[in-house]
Length: 160
Image 1 (spheres, rainbow, N blue to C red):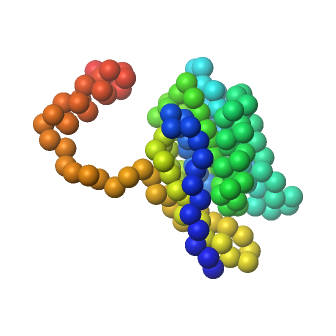
Image 2 (cartoon, rainbow, N blue to C red; image 1 turned 90 degrees about the vertical axis):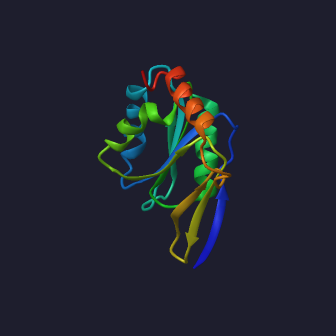
């Protein structure tokens, strides 16, 4: 078995969700969940089929996001994995809807940070072991940092 890291290639401001599922129906269900979860979302989803034709299945409503989903899914190449790229929305807007899709097994990552996917490859195929999401901590929050966090959550409308 060989361990590899696959860098997610995307513009800095674009968010994505990486997960694992178990059925070809995933692409259509994730498409519906994204549309229902966030009004005005622009997205692309790709799913790596793990049996049969073993194709990368895809959908979405934005060609740029669809292209990102297809190319990153191909780079990861792990069976039954999916990736959703989005703009005009954040993962928090659709994450619960995605988690409720019956064939979704787990969410591995939801971020806009620079990300590397840790992949194991054997003779049979590839699997996702985890991710490196962003950078390691540089310190501990102080009172100014707490105030910034408090203010930004209210500015974005996540807290009253």
